[in-house]
Image 1: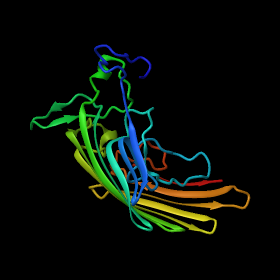
Image 2: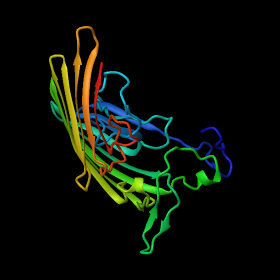
Image 3: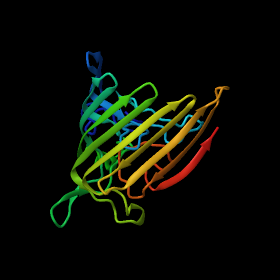
Length: 269
């Protein structure tokens, strides 16, 4: 319940505005973990799939992100997490497969029909606030189905991952025709595929990830992190995110709210 929201009553007939649960089991034979309910799937450097919150810009030289595969969703957030079932299975000594399936109702602007009779909405509403009549009208407007998988190879110094997921909305997303929305995602279906790698050589960590959407638009990040004898870190990374890259589940290092339309080189000590 956020400040300003009702507790019970006509607007909140089930009491609180949001309920969530996560049921997780770990280390059952080859089954590394299974999650049921609200969970997050996080892989690589966050370019291909990273649901929930994540570091967007490093405050120090610790720039390497390490996806934790499956984790329980925070009770503080009402959007951005997945809802369904997911599992990680050990296929071999150094090879793991994680699969995830999610269906959730997303807050969005009111749906309408175009001249062809296709149902659409203009934008998602992600704040989680339902304090007024206008905000209540956006609640649970659009159904989202999402399914994907990650294949992870991990050795003593090397880690390589392949990630892919597909996303479907019950209605098509049709953003307002403004200049800044020119390359924004539109439609009911999207998917992303990507690969990430991490390699540790003595005190030097190298990492990279690249991802593609259906239009073949690309987002890539690569970096190096050096651990010195004084426990300090030297770090540098380069990112190039296409303006056309469309991914609603990304949380890679960058300045923008999503990983698109920017490039830069950053060094840190």
